[in-house]
Image 1 (tube, one colour):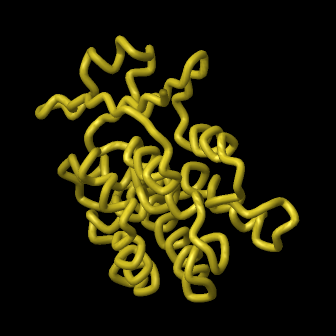
Image 2 (cartoon, one colour):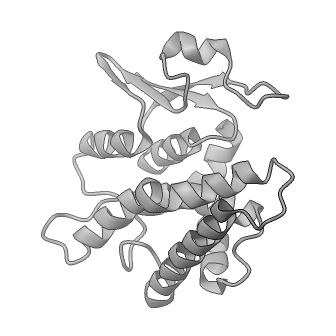
Length: 202
């Protein structure tokens, strides 16, 4: 049985959502952040020394990177659900966006979130760098969602699951107002029944 160690307000929501989309059986073990520090509890460190979520365990397999978990879970499927085949014209679009989430978008979105915890004048060099990176990344994303309804073209895929977590974080920081196609996309994605079910469980 697949077990997902889930931390509230974390990337592990992606994995619960994917499992709901795939209709695979799984268990969720809940961990709660410290309400003051927002750090993970000892219970998660007892599972894995990184004390980060998600942690996916299935038999002898233990994974701690959500992108690797997505590839692993899709490999358990006989069908090509949620991932184009390599012969598909959109396969490399899928692959690019699957990695763009953590490779490019994560740094400015998460840094912006962390900087929001401090009192800052807004004129530090890091603020200007993050603002520039956010504008660059979000403009690129908005252009993709102008041309196509999903990140891998015309079909929903696991790349959408990877991207949505960070776009929701950007939305909570009120960063998406200049990007109407991203806002429209999030509204559409959040109506998926598997997404809604993952919120109940996660």
